[in-house]
Amino acid sequence: MRIVFMGTPDFAVPSLEALLKSEHQVVGVVTQPDRPKGRGQEVVFSPVKVVCQREGIPVLQPLKMKDPAFLDALRRWTPDVIAVTAYGRILPPAILALPPRGCINVHGSLLPKYRGAGPIQWAVIRGEQQTGITTMFMAEGMDTGDMLLQETVEIRADDTAGTLAPRLAEVGGRLLVETLRRLEAGTLTPQPQDDAQATMAPLLKKEDGVVDWTLPAAEIANRVRGLSPWPGAYTHVNGERWVLWRVAVGLETSGAVPGTVTKVSKDRVEVATGDGTIQLIEIQPSNSRRMTMAQYLAGHRLAEGLKLQAIPLSQS
Image (tube, rainbow, N blue to C red; front, side, top):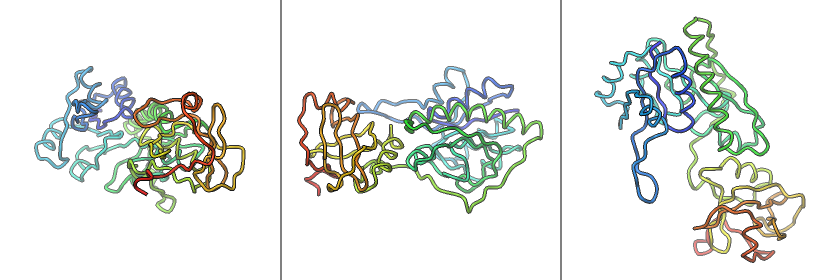
């Protein structure tokens, strides 16, 4: 079949590479426009575009999905199927109706749970022990289309969103090719989603990273994992912003005010929460590198009784 692929970040690359190794023909790729990045604002290509340049695949990067010139170019590729993995934009009806065999999406959850732009992060934040990949026919709603295939993936106790995503992406590529094989063979049975079982996974914002110390310790630990690597869970210590990269639920209980440092040892700092304590293991102070708590404490003093703040004291 003639396939147009739409995708942008690292998560989409295994899907594109799986298609390129399959018997199908990738006739073109649509990815997000090049964007300036970093302090130097250097223009950076998306990971999907990098693969396209390496493989000599035609690329479209529309600023607007309803641009007539873009839609005409898309039609000229005459795709049988449009396959979508983490493209990052909602497809208008004109595109959904274009390929005769439909638009197929690779979604990073076991639908109908975690519809939306942040399914991997939210599954970890919510303390799920498993998630997976769903392929589905795309509809006009947000991840509401009929499901095609699913595969479950374990969420390990030490997984972050960053370590879980590559495993899901590899499954996604394999499941996409299998979905296309069955579509061509006529052996797929689309399953409508049960909207009553649906949960949402909205796109995370930078401010979602702030640590609410009044939450139970287990919830904070899950948030730290789910918010890594972006936007990163953070708090303020003596007015300085700390990103928390690795924490653990403490073994002790505490009656201290949430956010209070209750214990300082050579390699750990323990902080009171709404229920239990959190051990800080790996941090990144402002304008510094990531370091273990032991490395930080070797050159800095931290007193028991210190209060960690959601916002700097100057703003509170």
